[in-house]
Image (cartoon, rainbow, N blue to C red; front, side, top):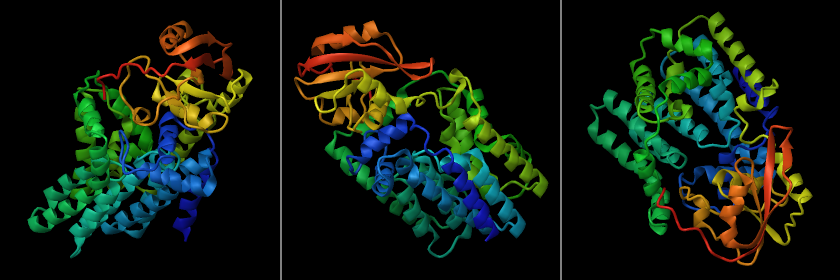
Length: 441
């Protein structure tokens, strides 16, 4: 009961800021939820169905979009508790490690952002529980859990590598579990058959795309995800839990190695931390100190007036004011449509436009394909309001002119103090032409 109370408090903390503007990817996933399908351009279908469930209950609000993650984060905290029991920790360590994870930035933000990470880490953790327990049906159960997790994020299949390293003496059962787990790919496979395998082209292009590496940035992100003291407690631990240690090191090691050759995102290694937290073997005092520092850092991040350029949420800041800015510029939802040249801005316009109608993506800069390319394009002869929050207005006008009878820049509208404004261009009588499709996925 005491553990439930403190887990509940951690989830209630999320509610204090869950109404913040959606990040671009969250808004994109919301547009997917309005067109439910077996799959999408860059992700499996789970996140769209998750958001559809939340918005069915609470409407097209920030809380509705994020409700699924918020709910799943409850189950994730209890899955961590289940893992502490499975690996044989004493009752005191079960309690404190569950709380440490729940109050870490990873534990808090898993219940905030409407992304694929919370469900992915949840099913990864559950699979680890059954791997450690090694019951008679363990591999069937693991296979089903991996299949479910694959509906949100395909990297969950990597869990089979550490499992195979430790439990290779039952090859037939291991193979059966792996085969069962492949069921999770069927929805995306069906969708890709219907859409010329664009997801596979996207993944292949992402692997082949070379950017500058960022190992230092990646390691800094890991400290931020866990919080400094808790991260240090994991690093210095000498606790003998070989499966947990190898699983955590495997995930972080693979992403760290990749970071020397290309830019990686800090959240790519989130699956390492359910098992990593099991390694904490410090006193209650140090774990409590880690929790307090974690909460203080989260509060500072969310509630201190950070400079705009340093704010990690700057991509979404001011999005709630887009509707007001558009209406002030003469936009009429009954006659006009919204359009932008990036899927991120198109997604935010869709959610924060006056009537939450999906905006259109016009690829005037030859950027890579995205989900908006697969949906109906802008109706011919329509007038459009083109919106961006950065870039050169004259350049936008030049790029838009071949597709409209007239193009006119309207006064820019501030949406976040003096730091961010909406560049608004009115384009009339769309001629139906579309930019040449890029060979980028």
